[in-house]
Picture 1 (cartoon, rainbow, N blue to C red):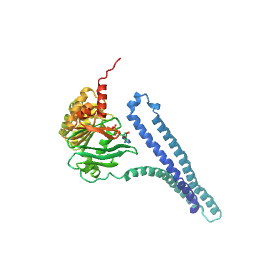
Picture 2: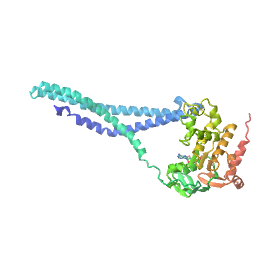
Picture 3: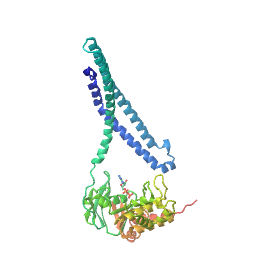
Picture 4: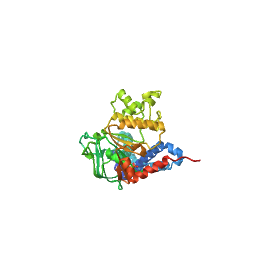
Length: 417
Ligand code: ADP
């Protein structure tokens, strides 16, 4: 009777085992479609302003629509194929009950089995098949979870950037014949220059010439492909990445504010800063006045769902963060978005407070703001086209002179009806 009960079990398990390949293939596609839809949805929400401005909202945002369509297709496919396979396996498994009834009746008729034992097996059968069915369904779900955990393991297997040395005390930076590519195409080619400690170096050049990449290489977001970057004569690849970053403050164009109070958003620069230190940094960065004018002052919630600040105010908050961090190297991406004159003056004041007595690398979009820089490096298609002071470069009559003349010309433009 027990043999009859489990007669179909091997066949049921074999079907589930054989279908593992299909389950993995469909599972991988389904997970990819889910991840894709989530990132498209995030893109849609973050880009809402542009989407509305170009009348691309709702159904018209084709990328999101396509991603949802793919997700729907993959969900139907996985349910439509795995569901029936599981149903067949469960039906085969449960057919053990039928085998048992036939065998029991046969044995009962032949007098080899008593009625109470027969009834006992029938009761047991019912109890046994229930958990087995649940186990089969869970096994399929477990397979799906294994796929998700494989993605987590992939990230966990990533090796941290090597480098154990302490960051050196000096803050001079030297690029020695540096070449770098994100993928196959080189975006920085045989670049060499030096940035003396406590000097201001401006990076200028057409869009896509490699200015941001150079600042990211200094902060070691990526390692160079060829050549070396030295900080105080130490190859930055040998320095512990966290210690290296503790020596660098970065002020980007697109400032991210956490969903928290203004106070805690400034505190990001130094987590154990006191209220006095936070206020000092806010005053230096010309933020204190507008913060105290808000009804909740430093406790005003900002970020998603909180009070919204103007572009200039956000940038000043990020400068306050950098001031609190007080790192000897400052990487600064000057705002391209035109600020109103008052904001521009305030941001410039804040930047001046930040960069005094520091090694500064500034990505400059408006050349008039970097006339006083100690060195201006002009990049063109990933190479150093020329470098020198503002006056020397103007005399050179090269790319810098062209860019300067263009900006001077556009500054004189007026709107005509
Ligand atoms: P710039 O700051 O002068 O505008 P970037 O340093 O941002 O220039 O870009 C230099 C080149 O590298 C461009 O061709 C750009 O398309 C490419 N690039 C920038 N970031 C990435 C990235 N994360 N992945 C691949 N290519 C990139």
